[in-house]
Length: 264
Ligand SMILES: [Zn+2]
Image 1 (spheres, rainbow, N blue to C red):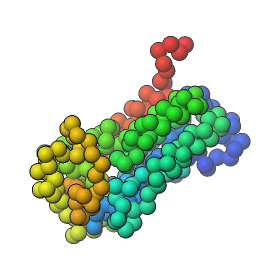
Image 2: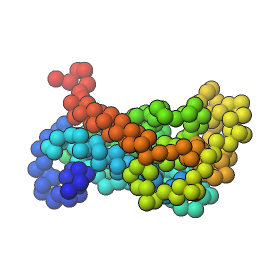
Image 3: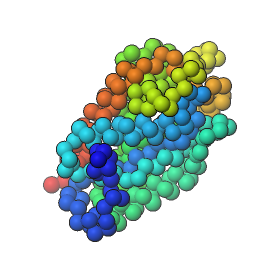
């Protein structure tokens, strides 16, 4: 049995869920990713595949009786930045906000007190961050956001400077991870090197600096890729996965022992 299966909440009956020990400090994990274009060489399910691989490894690092229960994955996210590329299936902001709040409400009504949203898609980040405060305020639950490869295990070693700055989508990092965990789904011969010079010459680059602007992928890259996928190796992928799993396991330990300073 996989580690995810061993912690998968929907495999239990309603009665078993009502009788779960440690519901007060245990954590319900909602995995969220995307189904969206990842260039000519990676499947549209890339973010979701990466999420499952990290989660499987994370749970394998923790004791079998660790109080974490995994919900079904939300394999759709807010991906409108990839509109116009076939295979992108996006939720609107309004739908995603509503879905996250409804799942938060339902988890509360099932008696859970801690919720962690585990995210692998950059386009979900802002929404997840503000919705968790609404869930906290409206349900009283403790709610946490874990953004893999965006704030947790930010990849760096083995990447070029250009990749660290511009390689945000389907580049070296994601291709390396897929080469490690699902090489059967990677079309290596189609992997592009795609850091458009027009992007590097922008006076205000979109991923840093003082001026934020709302880009769509088609504004920046014709291939749908930002990054150099030709540099990817399974060895790098193994390192990125291992880093993410170790850090996520540490954070889950912190979540189940978390308390506010004035809690006694
Ligand atoms: Zn991705």
